Length: 140
Image (cartoon, rainbow, N blue to C red; front, side, top):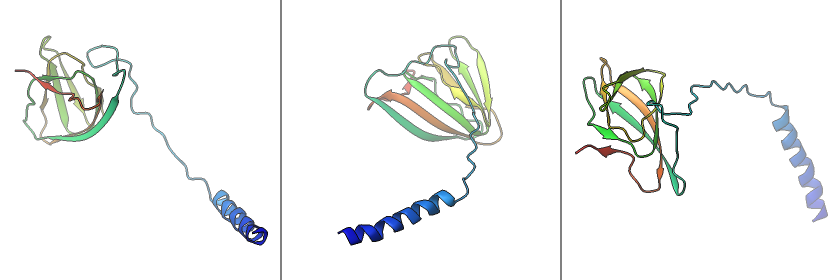
């Protein structure tokens, strides 16, 4: 056993040295967004237990209008392509988002999104919900 360790230790040390001798890869971190409140000015509140994170991609064709809906929990969206307009149904206030924008969606208020551009809107969407719940409620 001692002879096996005597052989293994130099190999392990050489492998570690080889990893340490590689030039360090330059990692570039570019902050894209920071938020403490939703698009409508509400503080961001997360579920207190059994949190589930869902990540989805959305593609909304040109001219398409989403149904009026609301989110009971936090939803974040990053616009990969296109131009999205989101309207708060109660206030009539609309906000436009374009490629590169980060959206912290309203929690509770009824709203509607529409693709107002000539190309598809592509979104990366992240929901933080109570495990097993849905984060979209359609207005009846």
